[in-house]
Length: 69
Image (cartoon, rainbow, N blue to C red):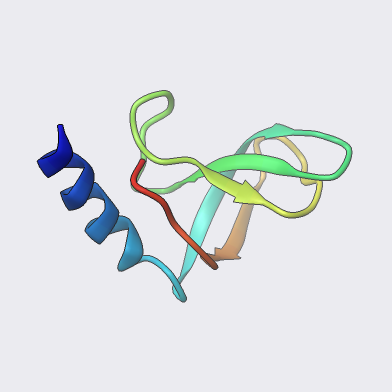
């Protein structure tokens, strides 16, 4: 599993600094959660958005940081 975590971390790090089209899946009072146009729900990465957005909306998000999964 360490090998997969390292591969995932490297792939995710390559996204930092780039802007992606993100579909908002959940929205709260202060933050939202979505996924890029390349990710499947409940399988791939999620994107944390620092502001409330409308669920179902597509927004352009610049990735500021990443982690292994």
